Image (cartoon, rainbow, N blue to C red):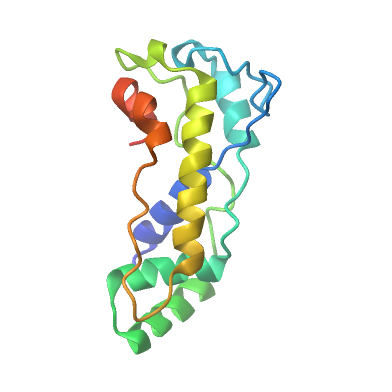
Length: 159
């Protein structure tokens, strides 16, 4: 299995997870009303470090990736076995961003809006990952409606 593809899927799973608080705090110590374009490097790091892992297991990740590549159950199972046997070098949760997003309209998006988007995305993603099986092409994760504001104004967060 292509290690880069595996890293992309597992990295994306780590990225789209988010903790969400009801007290105006994002779980990372960053005010949920703060505009994402105003985040400092330390705040971006804190947000990244606060992201919980997906509930999907390594085998479920690998099954999703394998089932995405083939609908042949035997070939799929061999790909899953090979994937699980590889050391996972992506255990650290790296959101892929070192600094605040700088898109022209990122000042219109708050940390809370991004967290709501990521929480909805994680729920959809976990449902797809945990239901993937060899012999059946997995469903597309899709983008939840909760991500509309983020997608419209600061798509670099989701891309």
